[in-house]
Length: 250
Image (cartoon, rainbow, N blue to C red):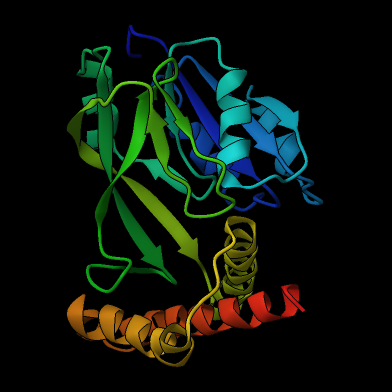
């Protein structure tokens, strides 16, 4: 366990399929696990409590606000932000345990996605580094409901860690489609709250551009059928977002 003191924060809703694997991957790595749950109807809360996680129930205010709520409950200075459908791999565990965490640094961790049993190498879901381990006194998530980002009191030094978080995204397309609807609605709500309105070009070409970017420029074509499905569904989300937006402003 890292001597600096780390709290893992997980936000959940109906994650009984994943939460045990997530929490178990953190044992011996972090000092405490905090779960912020937003109305689960399944066994998420009972499973988390049985694994000694501290569970707080909070209404859904968006990814950023709910992550901050969990971080504010932390008893330790460093926050490891992990999703319920992610696990820490062996190399990342070793890297975090051995790393001397330094005030003023922000740690980036590679995210690798598994989609329906297939590890993704290309498309918009290709492996990428994300802000995951940060000093609570210096960094907080912004208030965006989706696609949240970290903001800092002082600009930190970025450090990449070895290893990865393994993201077990969806087991079937129906699950993916349902989440796509949810993300589209949240993104539309974000547009409304920001006073943003998509222009004519974005309305006409936005979904197609999203597909081309994922399938061609990010080489989703090399993933075969899976790459096509991911890229097509990303384009569908872009179109749904505009449709939800139009309903909201009527």
